[in-house]
Length: 329
Image (tube, rainbow, N blue to C red; front, side):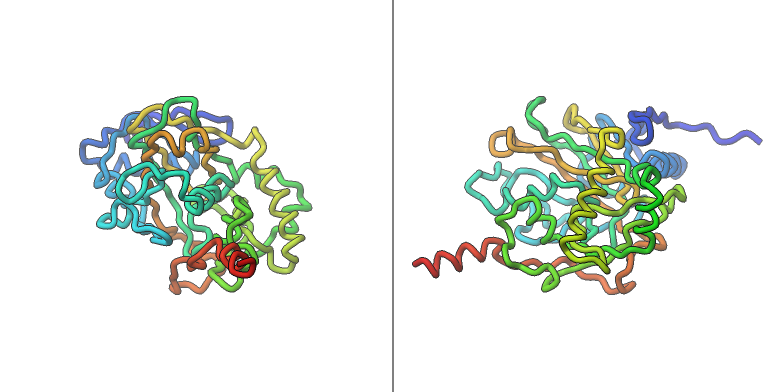
């Protein structure tokens, strides 16, 4: 019996992961058979690039919904530009009125630095996210940054020493957004104990549902490994991230034109935004993302299944400076 003819072409971009996809017309209804091919591709490659996809917000949301229940943007410090479309994550350098955020907004600038560290989306929530779909609406001129890097955390795990694999077996990570933001910008959340705020718990290694391969789920959100001190955990985390982000595991996606879109599996790869200093206060970078919740057997990690919450943070990330000014004054 002949198998159904494939309608998509996957062009590998790296020796072990990432592929460019050709053959989808996002302006027309997409049949289930094509969605099944995309699913097979994302399971294999972890990162899929769609050039000139040219989706609008509604198409972006509806396409992502084909792969699972949609997550919503947590309104931590701002409403975002799309309050009536909660599934669109506004990850631009624009304020709520669509203007470029000025460099006088020091806190926002520092908070965004956390995105430049290796991470997996929403690892700091009790139910992790599975797929992310990021699309470019406006991009800065070429050569000014804004690219996105991905790391093949499945192959990185497979290449670990047996000693590391033994150490990581069943090891639980305490994950914190505060820790990630402070790691990237040390002036944020000084003297704040992450354990006084939102902490999620995930194992360092889980089998990847779509491929059966083990995945190294250790990112910049890991504050402490249970059974180890914060200091020991810091050394372990940095060693593991340094291993997983070696050039042989990394692929950089260059945003070539508005309309490009990239889909990735947060349970198979890490990612990070590259340095934005060349464009962030000068040129518009309008990027929008959708995410699906993980609906697999490890979706809730080591957290209480069904007990969902959104991350809670101190209202003033620079409260220590205000306190110091009061003391000095």
